[in-house]
Image 1 (cartoon, one colour):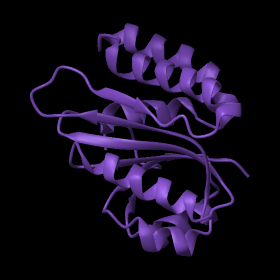
Image 2 (cartoon, one colour):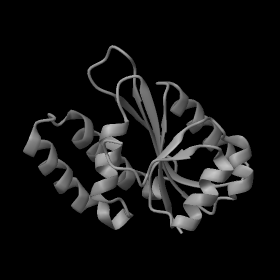
Image 3 (cartoon, one colour):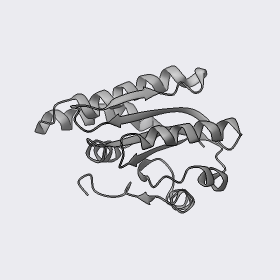
Image 4 (cartoon, one colour):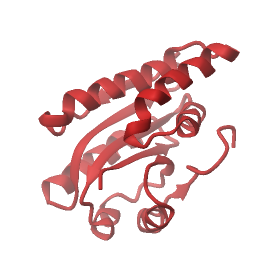
Length: 170
């Protein structure tokens, strides 16, 4: 199954470190990374920056377009009542086939703030135990299309916390 996960870190550089660990794990056959992106929001900047992994060329262009659409809509549309809600509503139509819900988009928008970073990953065939040994960086899972049982294993293995079921403001 293709898994979509978003990990938030309370440091603007930690997601980049996690992405490098994910790339090393993929090189060792621990996980197949279809694509990933890092969103960094350094303190003192108005908006976050995004770097796209371009992992698998076959699917990379499609995911690259999605990362651009996600980040652009979530962080560059003014946060003015109906405008933000309409933008999230529109993007949720584009992301629902990937298992990304409107509620998850709202959570991502509210959780990733100045001074934080996030790793967005699309993966397959992960050996969670071996991957967890490599990537224990204190992140919080804020969005995923995994089942509750898979999510529980992921959180236990990675030593993070799960806020993917929390309200967007919580």
